[in-house]
Image (cartoon, rainbow, N blue to C red; front, side):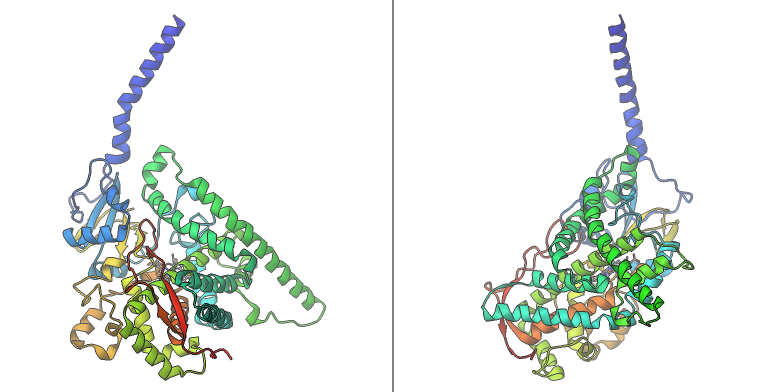
Length: 527
Ligand code: HEM
């Protein structure tokens, strides 16, 4: 009897669950967002699939290209849906301009993951994922004034110059041995080692491989995290924490290395303080100050506007390291691929470098302002191959864009890749033509002035959440490309470098690494 009752109860329980399941699905996936201004039109929406909405597009392998195709068919301002999560997709310069200007504060937050609470990467201590509030404002000020501002970049110039010489001598070594070079790997060594030294003044030699491995892992993890943050709300309701184990594993490895560096820095600072106590005045040499020193100072400052913690310090270092090295090495490789495929452009660039610098010394950062064609080459590389093709933010409040209603908490996706290949504002948008960035070469100058008013060029995003590392990025890119063009000819086995994009990554990476053999033009530039 008891057994029958148990079976009955089980059936009854299953029956209730089956009845509740559609309700659960409805609540999670179909229920419309609360919209206080019903009656206003949402932006147009392309056809979607039942339940999942437009998820299949977000999951596509080359997401920026799928979204670009969607926009060219249905328009530059679209309303998409993933389950019940609303997304606004922007693919033209004029719509992006209106949002970045009129809604700058409203879209100044990104969404983070509830599952990444204690993580140093993509977690609640991070700067990149921090909501637009007191912490973000405090750190942004510190970054733009003391960490990546012009004086800070001046201070770290020596570090980058040493790394540039090492970069040149590694390439020269390969040239002497007639060996092929994987340009991405060489670029990665340059940016990783420079970033390590700028951030912690450590040579990072013993940790370099480890850190490089971690950066590679974060790239593959980023796509999953983007997906997890898009699916955040439905998953939260179901109590599912996606990729938490993987995320925490990467985080704890970063933590291990950075905690060690932090303790070393603190010891060094204490030793200096002690020496001062004994009456010997040792000024903390400006040359010896790295990003970690500045952060420790802010951490110890009792009167600071915001009290940061050790985790904030470590998290910011992870953010800067990943944001700074992966993106710049990607664009160095893309730009060299374009130059090898466009020998006339390469010749013109080399002509400019030879003319301005001569053939007796290596290009330096201070030469860059005098090399307009090199600057145009860098800009064109970034336009065609933006390492961060999608800028993702959140509308905090409801608003109107181009006469359409955008509900609060809608995710904003600006497809920078599509904006910078928008045929309405770019002539021959898919071609590599650095000349377009040279002021004097414009034929229809009037037309160009009108175009310049629209921020069609957004490889570093825009508005207050735009990239604070763009100046540093131009220095890395200018020197790496400058050295490779000034000092070497490049031989490839194929007729042209394959320009396919890698599928399944968040950053815009190449599907095939560029393998080329450097041929030295001048062997005595360092002597
Ligand atoms: C070619 C190289 C780079 C590219 C293409 C790039 C691109 C971007 C983009 C598109 C964003 C999002 C901007 C937005 O939401 O509007 C961003 C954010 C950011 N980038 Fe970069 N970046 C590069 C290099 C760097 C470097 C060298 C650093 C620093 C070392 C850096 C640090 C950051 C940080 C901290 C953010 C987050 C800003 C915030 O949330 O307020 N980036 N970057």
